[in-house]
Image 1 (cartoon, helix red, strand yellow):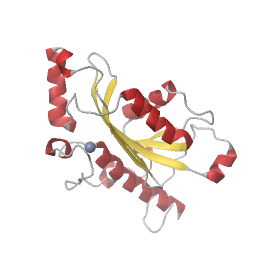
Image 2: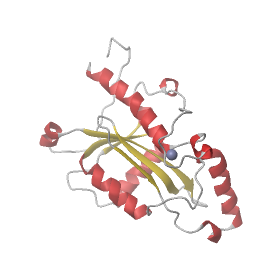
Image 3: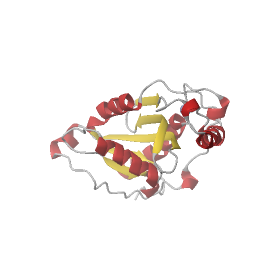
Image 4: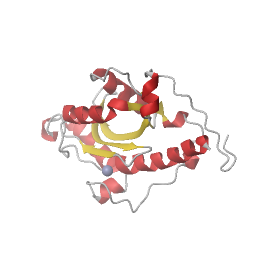
Length: 203
Ligand SMILES: [Zn+2]
């Protein structure tokens, strides 16, 4: 219990096994957020934007992922759904992106080789990241714990500040994206709340 800020952080990371010496070397924690479309007739995510930020470092990785196929090859019903999500949810056009999905996976896998904890908001998204890690050839010292931010004590919606309207660090600087959901903006905002909670816990 932290008396100075009245928070009570008590989350126990229990999903990962690491040789003890690693804890003396480093504890690497990250917050991840992604924006996506949903594949037709399934709950599968088609990731478009992914942001990964360090909790205790200034590390930032940010990607826009190329589409699996061109928009014009999709059936009109699915195109309508895509248009809706682009317009109202995250503002990212289907065809936008400059890295293939496998290349992005490879890049984050390299960075996260020593990660101990990865925080992400929303159970379904946490499950997706877990599956992505499982499907990758993860380094032998173990998978990081994937922690849903909503399971962290003190991380209630009420404590999360509203979206920053003046956020200007995303490379997709369209007003349609920046006034809906930007992964880079969300990940850094969630990281700031989490960092405050974790620092509280250490006091
Ligand atoms: Zn963005």
